[in-house]
Image 1 (cartoon, one colour):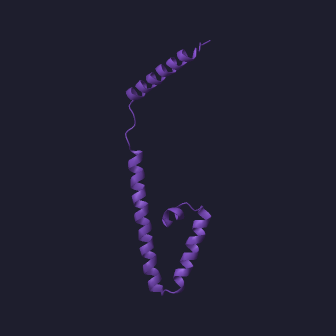
Image 2: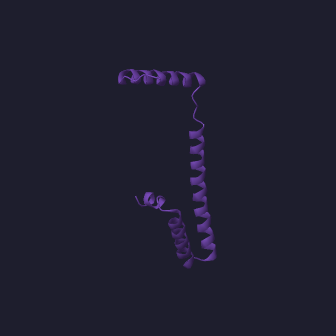
Image 3: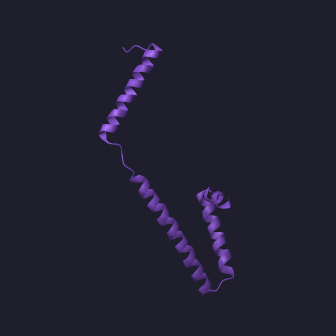
Length: 93
């Protein structure tokens, strides 16, 4: 889809493209039409930004593991390390 490709443009290219599109659009529009279109595009941007912000907030508020869970994970990793060392014939000095 062309929109996905657009979102992967370098920042300078995206800014340049937006500038060109903006100047092309104002060429055939009255001041009232420019204002109406600009406000609509601004609203679209606000909706996208608000949605992204909410999604980021929900992702960052995911519950963190408790200290007990972290302790269990660490113990499991230590046990796996011991098993690996034993199977590899590793001896600590």
